[in-house]
Image (cartoon, rainbow, N blue to C red; front, side, top):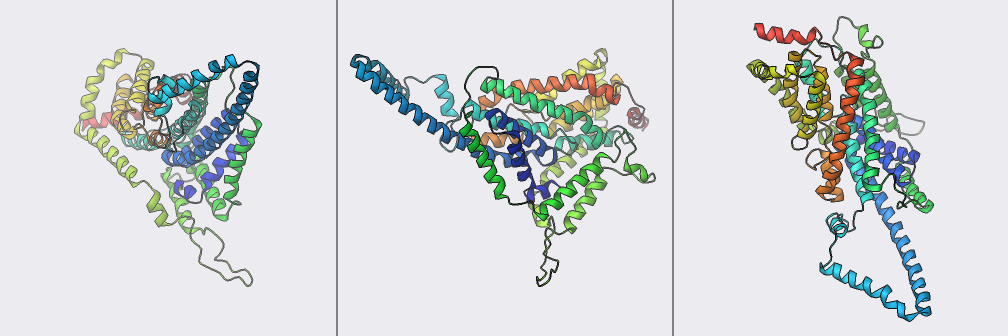
Length: 489
């Protein structure tokens, strides 16, 4: 489904339309970029969403830079006129206005005077040859943050979520309470909250949210120029095509079928087939088949004198083969194999025996420690690898302390996507680092705060909202079945 959305450029149309609706002032523009990236990352690959947004951000920043140059030229012209008027009044003051500036410039270029700001700018120079300001860095970091956070919104949003689902269902085949709808009920509000907090954090860290200063690009001329640029990109897409309409309809059908399969609060459509086991793969396969069957245009129809022509399908195998990340599928399969091997070999039981000491701690304290470990471990290792290692151990730990396995496994999975400090942590981080060429220290300094913000918001939300909402504090009967069976074997 995600490949079909990318193939017909529906994601570009959505992103540009959201930017036009949000507004083009600097703060609104950053908010629009983050909200758009967040929404796209819920449904398509995080890296694809980031790669799609970075050219738009770059174009907007180029437009902003052009206006800054114009404003600087105007200011320079005003200063020259003022100096000329001042010089006519008193020639004795002229050296104090010009000589120190010239000397300072020459010293800076010679390297004798190289303060922190100049050093930061020299290292943060982009590939286009211009310097990145703090405001510009915040735009690139914003889309990386939003892409990482957006992937937590749906159970299909990232590879870590799918890994969690596969491991959880293999360890607890009789488990209840986890599906597409219940995942979204908790994680979508949390995703929106963290995206908003990320926007606030970038404003405070780079732009000074509560400082009384003039932010670059707040003029009406600037806003109109940026809006014109976004509108131009949007109009280049043309009117909504038959291809896009079909993909959009199938996308909505897929989401609705996922959500209402077994939403818990009402009987889902899966209850219509009591003798069959209907899972999330059922609507996904049905929609994918339709993508290969339905035509992308109406050329196959004969209208009057118009001759019919062959119409391509909404999605072809060639496009699917080129864009689908088969490596992720192999990575997921490898993770499931490792999890199964640890259970069969008795490694999980051995680890469980070593974890008996955790009984003396409260589940809330253990949850907090798990969130911190998962959040920072994913900075130096693959998110999927961290989840593959942690989840079987956490499942065993939950059996020991007698709490619902989801109490530790779900937060650990979500916070494994909260990797904001290093370029190697996630593909979105690496993409924005490569495009902007910012310093690693710029990403680390802002990322530490973002890591802590998301970790705290997840912990607090899960303890006070998620756990009571889904009854994760109790130890369900299905959680002990696998353990009993394995022990008897």
